[in-house]
Length: 220
Image 1 (cartoon, rainbow, N blue to C red):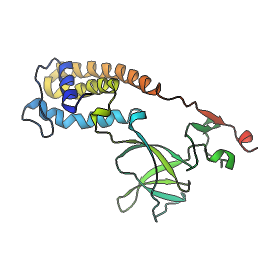
Image 2 (image 1 turned 90 degrees about the vertical axis):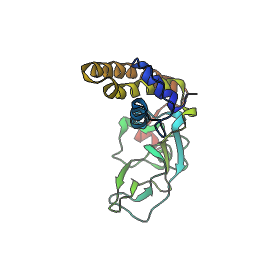
Image 3 (image 1 turned 180 degrees about the vertical axis):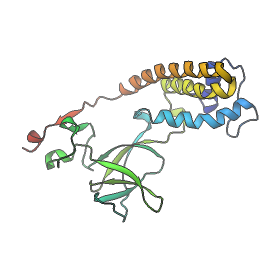
Image 4 (image 1 turned 30 degrees about the vertical axis):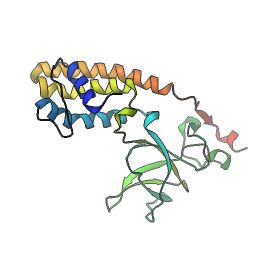
């Protein structure tokens, strides 16, 4: 698997830059290393937010807080290293791919359906500055994208997409001017192609099929 430095060098090669970066943490002293150190974490985190990557997904019980915020019944602490919240679940839920018909949350799910459907939630920041997850789900479980920094876990297509996204960010500082802007657009277009391939490859790792809950059936 590729290291962060190897991903940076791959991005530089997309721009036709023959420099080889040896370290970005700390940067080894070259202009390329300085730019890579600045833009690599931004590109990585942006790509993590683009899709619910299966290899960067965790599921854990949430820690209940004393604070409450109307109209929500419960406030939970944001998990460490959480990058993006995906779904709040009942602790008995086997999956979170069952959803109310037409995506409606404006009615109360009957008990037979509630355990299998993702529950409404919001992320907010309290006056204390603490980020919290607000929901009406008791003993809530969260499925979320983690801030993944271990490049040994990055699949090959994710690495390819990341290298092109990083290249699009490096193009301006390294090449500069209108040529740099044109290169940035070219690299961004290549990124979109590889992003699509990476998402398809990741989605093929799942076999769950979304099931719609029709209120009058689930209430039986």
